[in-house]
Amino acid sequence: MQLPPVIYEDDALMAFDKPSGLPVANDRAGKPRPSLMGLVHVRFGHHVANVHRLDADTSGLVLCAKTKPALDFLSGQFQSKTVAKVYQAMVVVLPVERAMKVVAPVRNPEGALPESFVVDLALGEDEQQPGRMRVCKGRGGKACRSEFRVLENFGRFAFVECRPLTGRTHQLRVHLAAAGAPILNDPFYGDPESKLLLSDLKRGYKGRDEEKPLIARLALHAGELTMTHPVTRELLTLHSPLPPEFEIALKYLRKFSPRRRQSSGSAP
Image 1 (cartoon, rainbow, N blue to C red):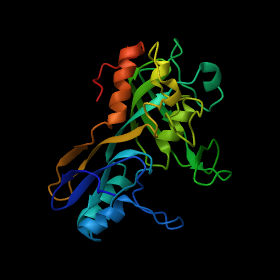
Image 2 (image 1 turned 30 degrees about the vertical axis):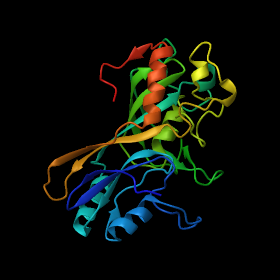
Image 3 (image 1 turned 90 degrees about the vertical axis):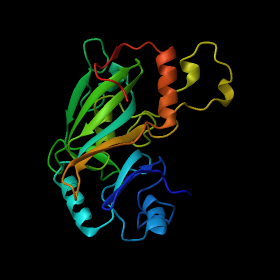
Image 4 (image 1 turned 45 degrees about the vertical axis):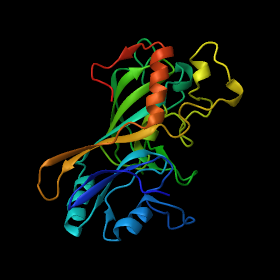
């Protein structure tokens, strides 16, 4: 397996554009398999250290440090929640009658997602399903807050900008599901009946029998990180381009699906 593209590199740090499906590091309890840090260590040496994690199925920016001082300085920013993180997600806007079954459905008077909304729900480990998280209404949960902005609304689907203000496991995935808009193709918290198919958008589409979804992976991408550089002490913003499958899906959604609303901000 090839090393993912390097988005940025200097004497103190480097950032990679991790593809969906590649874990950042191996789970010690699981079977060994290719990982980003395994590839990094083979190519650059074991002195390069991972600063933060992404879910294996989430694509986008992963930051590494080349020196111990840089690692300590960058890790401290993640721990103190001063790193600004921006994700993009394609979500499934569940019907109101189904969304009402979740914890905190979000809707405007027309039944669509509002242009912006906040989810402030504590999260904790799901004892019934190891490896998953759940909303905790009482004790046992950790404070968790996420801000969302709908960049483009396509009715059944929406393209959303996500800003996690805390850094809990599966935070965006659980918060969006709780808002009645789970991330497309989320195997833990999503809607298994929802697929983004061109045949559902384009009338007279042929080839349905062999059709593949426009996006077949978890539709979550870590697109931007802003932090203080460990050496210069200046703000540094890194960007990861939107994956090709997202671009293709957006092209067809814009062409064949009526958009009810687009945010005043420009979509990436």
